[in-house]
Image (tube, rainbow, N blue to C red; front, side, top):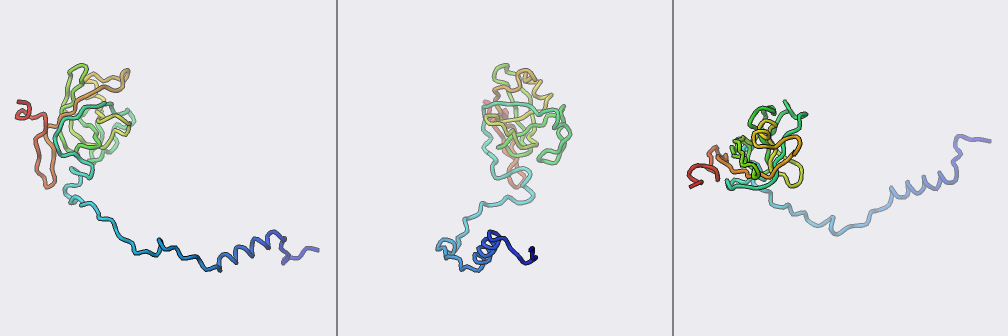
Length: 177
């Protein structure tokens, strides 16, 4: 005969084990009870300089050499890190290390063609690439859909610094002499 109070023997064992485990006193872990020491926190930039300078920014103004690629069509009109919209015909570019607002000359090492860009976004997120360019800028320096990427020199012209000042980069007339 079936009783609503009948438990299968296996279910009864599991129930007793669960209730028993809940009532057990946990073992003390010495590491868990040790005083917690907070790691020193990195200095945070002020809210006014956050857009121009972040924790990974290189303020040196030095020239970099690496691969450049261009934004895919699907990114047209999307918001970039500085809040502007990605313009496929603009001079916008993305860098992981240059501060937002940096102007730089990007030169295709193979062709010698160059263009001036403004860093408005973060990226590229493909290993070995140092800059993403708008499609029109990429085309100006000889990067096409066929070749997809090229070795470039990225020479900063003006680098925004914390506090609103700027620093001349490697591609200013004074630095080229």
